[in-house]
Image (tube, rainbow, N blue to C red):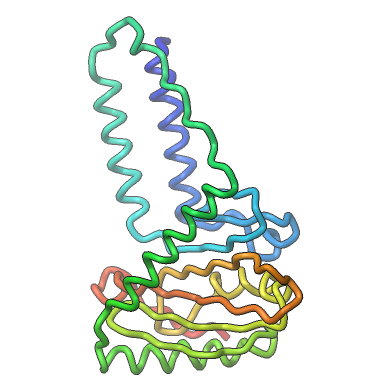
Length: 223
C-alpha cells in the first residue's frame, strides 16, 4: 500500500472516530473532574483553565465534506516522488498559545453579543427561561447569578462563586446542563485568576442561532 493510501486510510479512520464523538460525549462531567482534564470541542487540553462544550450543530456536515474530499484524493492517480510522503504535523501549541487562542474565541463571542440587536419578543422569554433555570441550580452549584441577558440569538449569563475551586467543581455541569426551551451551543471559560482564593466570576454563553433558524429542536424540561 502506497504512503498516500495509508495517509488517506488513517484520515478516514480519524473522521469516523470524530463523527462518533460528535454524536455523543465520551466523558461525563464527573469523569472530567475525576481525571482533572479539560476539553475544547472534545479535544483534551493539558491546562486546568478551560471548560468549553458546544452542541454538535454542523459538525457532521463538515465531516461528510472531508470524507468526500479524501475519497476524491484516493481516486486520483498516485505520483511517486517527494510529495508521496505525508507532511510533518505542525508543532503542538504552547500553553500560552492555547490560552491566546481560547481568549480570542471568547472575545469573538462577547463581541458578537455586544453588537447584536435585541429581538424583544424572543429575548424576553429566553432571558426568563435561562434565569429561572440557573436560579434553580444556584444552590446546589454554589454560585450566584449576577445577570442574565438574551438578545437576537445569543444569551450571556454572568455567574459568581466564592472561589475558583468552587467554580471548577460546577463549571462542567453548567455547560452540559439542559436548559428548557434553549437547545443552544454553550460556552464558558474558567480562566485561572491571580488569586484562586478570592471571589471568582465567569460568563456562560448560549448561541441559539440554529434554534432560531429552525434547524435545532427545542428541549423539554428535565426533572
